[in-house]
Image (tube, rainbow, N blue to C red; front, side, top):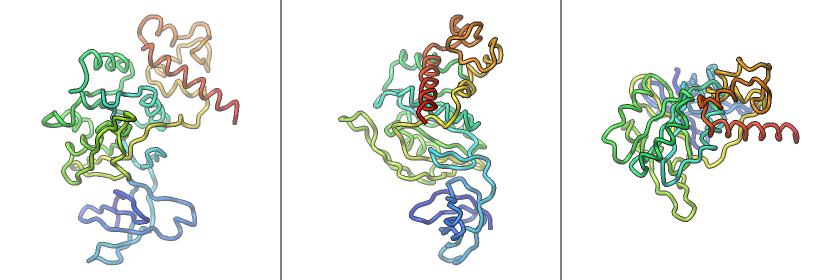
Length: 292
């Protein structure tokens, strides 16, 4: 029997087969090969007890892709959720996640929650920051909006991993999008200005036919992928689309003459804030290479 792993807790993997969910253990060969099944994996299972819906995972089918953080497999896109306020968005953290997704070839959708707590000026600044990236950008209020049709349209027909910091309202928004599982929600700590972790494990949730959401625990930091600094430009869509027009192959877009990226920056066709983030990430990768 084939199915999809929707979550793994305490050594048990819950496999959705279409008609039922089976609690399965993985065969010993997985531990021997140091291979861990992940939410989103397609699996072949043997049923041990039909009445109790228990089984064992025999094989994990070939993965389309796999992410380390969040630890999920076979995703079509990422929905990155940050709050507009309480807590305020950390754009360096957001850009790190976008780089990680680009590095693995996974499209991203940006969702900014709690628009009811933000001014129109603050939202316009965010629009401007990401206007030239090509990422779909949506502003919502999970608590105030009567529905989430705009987001549901972006998710339809795809498996989407949801990610963002604690307190951004991921669980509240997911509760709007599907009715099968009610995710716990929590308040933001006034003392530290961050959300409390309410999602403790990654879970694949059914939204509608051929549409799934992977809810994941929040995070407050994220390392850049293991890559050479020369590859960073390909992880910024607005830089990647221009770097072939630079005079020098392998242009760093920092100091070289006739750089198409810096020319676009001077002409206002490239966002200054995103470019400065690129510079910081480039230096970070340069230092990492130096000391490893």
